[in-house]
Length: 390
Length: 66
Image 1 (cartoon, each protein chain N blue to C red):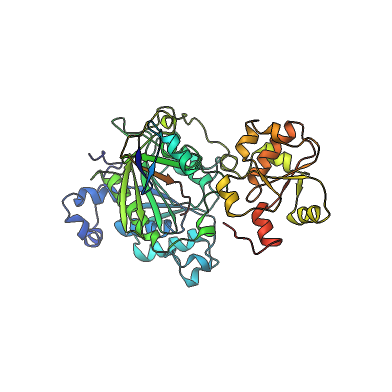
Image 2: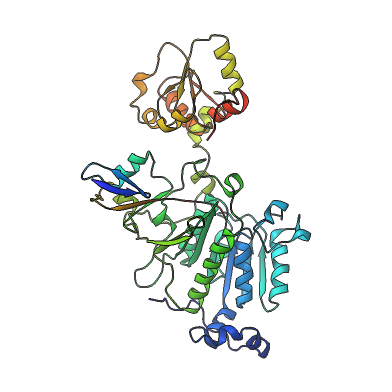
């Protein structure tokens, strides 16, 4: 069932606009009425990167009257493999400016507003307020939760897409949707994965053309919402697998026990590397992998404890370590297994989890415990490059 | 009982829940969504939702790239 159109029609289309949009106008479901709605629409695209590039180009070509672009980054040569709104001559130029110039070339009837700032809890509501619809094409969890929460607080719908390597996910979130269909991103993913668990595209790579596959679905959903046609992805998550070449959808339900969003929070901390406790514990109690090597070589008496999970321990370990997963330390369950007569050195994959466990140990009275910054990955990189990494 | 877990047929104890399926994979639920027969089970219901023979369970991971 389609939703009511988000936007009222503009008063008229000019003769030039009728010519330009004629292939839309002769589709009965769009027609002059739908095109006038697009003309009147104000759409904000957060991020002029991989998803933002095709999204902005197609939104502009489709005749969305006002486009806002939030981006504070500049074009880098490594962007050009997928961010097709930017070209060679745009390298080092602000992405927002480069995008605006490309849009002007495609459709001069589009008004473009630039928001060349880092989206944060202070400015998000003000930036979002004037737009009918938001498209989220950002590249990090912190901004994604911020976009969601700001959209919820303002009652605005938004189209969400994310990509990694060969896989993309798309949905429409709208807490205030009519007919009890409302839900938001937190109903799907209540919180982000632990820091470091899910790599970004910069860390893990992305097939360039995946941006077009997902960005075009995002624009399709935007046009449907603005003009009130078709069945929106609200309440469904679309998962695209480029290698299998499959699109599948799963239904999403409102989480009845989900916490109500009442204000914007500190999203860096929400998604952040480690907790404040862990940061404090790690300050002054962090050793390097070289320090650890020196301790082992000099025959110092201490217990090295690996706080990762068993399957990680199987992949690679530092010689002499014993495995006690972090959660067993945090719950207090493993405290009795810890040696009382010698100092404890903790490590994990890269230093985040061991810092959390360190905070728990310090609280439990193991005040001389330290952890290894960089973890087993640092060990494999700097001390024993023959070890596998993961 | 046998369930299809991320495209693999696995054996889980009778009465196993969505949470048990995640445990089987060694996953913590943070940043994951679990769909049972094509429908995402809200986090709060993971321990209450029992799987039956032949259920299809898909674990989806949040991705951040854009």
